[in-house]
Image (tube, rainbow, N blue to C red):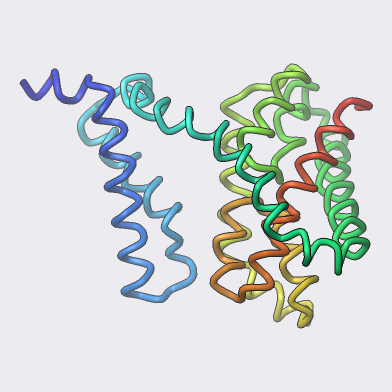
Amino acid sequence: MAEAMLSSPFFGLVLTCVAWCIGCWVQKRTGIFLLNPLVIAVAIILAVLVALDIPYSTYQLGGDMISLMLGPVTAVLALNIYHQRTLLREYFWPVVIGCLAGTLTSVGSILLLCRLLVLDSSIAASLMPKSVTTAIAVAISDAGGGIQSITVAAVLIAGAVGAIFAPLFAKLFRVTDPVAEGVAIGACSHALGTSKAMEIGQLQGAMSSISICICGILTSLLALFL
């Protein structure tokens, strides 16, 4: 009975949802910015898989159900731009230039480090789209011969770092303009960072949401020439 339950696709789905809810609860109760729900959820899932000696492939049967949602969620980003069209019209050039600078910095730094460290081209292709949302990043990685699992891990790390340290970086670099802060978060750490931007302020969240879409487009176009 227990073996049948653990091998069911619903095991991975339920475990993921429960781990995420626990992460959100811990973060709200403690208020410690390092205790990000994503970090806690990943730690819980890994601990359960190791403790019960469950292969990752078995867990992924349920995880694939969540992955199926990435496509529709990415398409919804276009609707978000439409809803924020007034803000985008008002701050069009600052947003576009900021996203372009963020995209060039992200992609350029990865390519430079991979060359300096003499890494394989597949690793560079896997890491290059780390700062865009997962569905777009995986598509870019696959087109360039990258390794999907490395891409997903890089995207998660970039998002978690942005979600955890965004307020600290804003204070450190004295970023006080809400538009600049939102664009920077969205350009660097996609949806995970945007969730934090929404907590910081409504304008920051809106700008970060727009940046996700624009950076995804710019990264996809840039990848065609690399």
